[in-house]
Length: 400
Image (tube, rainbow, N blue to C red):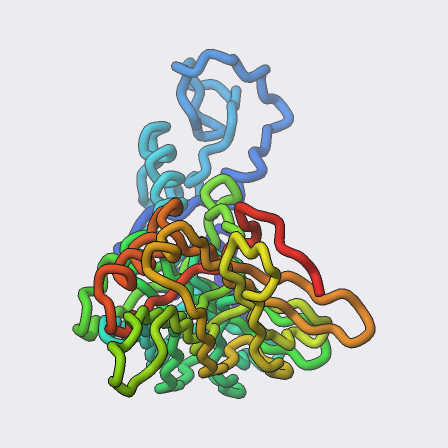
């Protein structure tokens, strides 16, 4: 209630708590007395019976006397001509405030972005367009927002992508495209993209504003899908994803050529293994990068002559090697072999760190088995496929 005292206006605490600047349907708003119930000096002990009335006016008892009970949360509104709320309506109000369509969930802002999955290149393009109505995080009432992308489940540092930072804005516009390489159709069915909006602070740690999660199965191959959704608080710990030990991706090419006939010229017969590139490797150094290289073995290796190594690429998590290695072997022998491919981080003066690896043979499962069988069946054809690097291999790998 607003009381005029000369030229000075006084606003009650109930009216102050009732200020609502967010759009949406008008709902009853709990007042301060709902959080701090007050008792009159002549109040009688409150009965634990839940069937008793929730609120009575201080001067209107059952006998019309001066006995008082617990004050109504909306008693001030009742004096102004409004009615009091029942116990059932008060409970419904608390549920609405905590529901997903409450003002609290829209106060963080909205994010607009596009997703497109290209099947031919196994790449996922994420175009961050803009955000609106972000929550102010700085003293000047603004923020310095940027967007981080993570693929879940997976190692956060290995697949984190980040946009540029827009200074002093609550309605930033990025129009920036971030690309994940080596995303298979199986990934599109089981993975979720997490988009986090954060406020950059140069002097202190960056602050979290809100996030959104999109199941990649909602995106159809070779079609662009636009999203415009509200940012949310992160889910409770019991609902978070368990991070699997994925250490990155590796693009391999396999080709088996039969020996050329006598008198014919051509490439030698055997297995050609192409190490093309890696993507989103786990960071093994303190600078947030790795110095990766790849080793391959064709096991069992009785004569210890099947080892090949690529060059070391410095300070990168997405190296490109484009190197090819050859094994002179017949098809009947190759059926009983296992191709072991491992990725390592080079450290000068210390033992190298194992990043991840994959084994291809007739005795494995998943993409590794399909890639190996495609190579054996399609003689003369070069078969490329992305592989997930595991943190452990069936057989112990040797260190350099």
